[in-house]
Image (cartoon, rainbow, N blue to C red):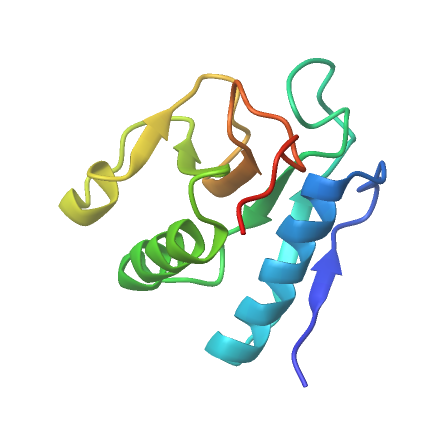
Length: 130
């Protein structure tokens, strides 16, 4: 059985959005038959969705470029419009498939998938459709 693992020092603040993200990560471990490593939760960020428990970073270290792209699109599909996924990198990739999904950030300590509640939304939504 594959599981979601946490890097040393990762902390979690309970939130509804965080529970959804972790649930989808666990489903991914079963779908892709591999462990996933969360490298950042509520730690190491002072602003945005991380400190409130509504964002996580997932390591892509063990994946080749094709796997990164596949897992990125799978997460986008599974999480839906109330969540946001980006492939965050400190510098641009030379791989064209990764360039299509990357967001270059000087603050990134390494390539990772950043997943969070969509900006400008609340989770759970105030209304639920039937």
